[in-house]
Image 1 (spheres, rainbow, N blue to C red):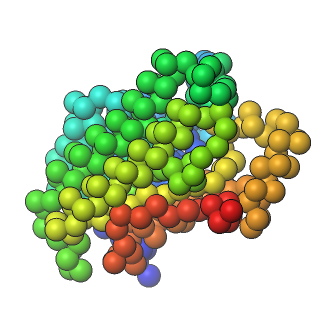
Image 2 (image 1 turned 135 degrees about the vertical axis):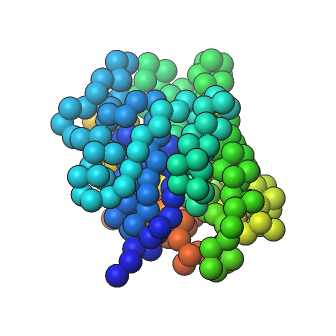
Amino acid sequence: MPGRLANKIAIITGSSSGIGRAIALLFASHGATIICSDLREEARIPGPSEAADSSQPSTVSAITSAGGNAIFVKCDTTKSEEVGALVKTAVDKYGRLDIMVNNAGIAVETGTSHGPRPVWEYEESAFDQTISVNVRGVFLGTKYASLAMKDQSPHPNGDRGWIVNLASVFGLGGGRHSSGYITSKHAVMGLTKAAAWDCATHRIHVNALCPGYTQTAFTAPIWEDKETTAKIEGMHPFRGLGTPADIARAAVFLASEEASWITGIGLPVDGGYSSM
């Protein structure tokens, strides 16, 4: 049977590791052709050195070795010319762009020298960097993807494209010591809702995913303390912490024709965290 994303052309930013990698692999297994994008192709071990992780193949290699189709395009999502070139590559090579997943993001509150801190101690440079990657990057991805999608021929169901932005449960509510990250994810939700209205007449879906605490290499520093881990697990009533695969499965739904009458939403994938 054909996959749920058969013959779709998809870009996933931040696809070398974590949630982006899981989305790329699952999209490919559902028949999509993947343009993987990140600052570097190989998987990374987060930290000050951002060293390559030689224990696993690149996302492109993992997809192609399983019989799928994928290429890699380097892109700094904070730079307009690079995001525009990324989308142009998809259109030039494959004739269209069906799915854009704006996944690339940062959290200076975890795994960096900045760490969590109250707003009065939050470094302005860290706040600016967070907004640049998490908001400007998503804006540029949405801008250039919708620009390409709005004039391309529709699919048989009438839709021209699907844009999926990565927000967070912290784009739906607040919390301590994360003013930069929380601000950025609320902005992603606002952008998603505004763009959904702009794109609706062109039959382009624009939605967001709102993951709860998810086990990735980038959140690994959080799980080093068993007491903290137990507390966070208790805030997710259904099955504790999430996995990248949990988020990827929801991304497939929002990027498929099964989401035929859904746009402008933030879908919590959080084990019940946001029901508090």
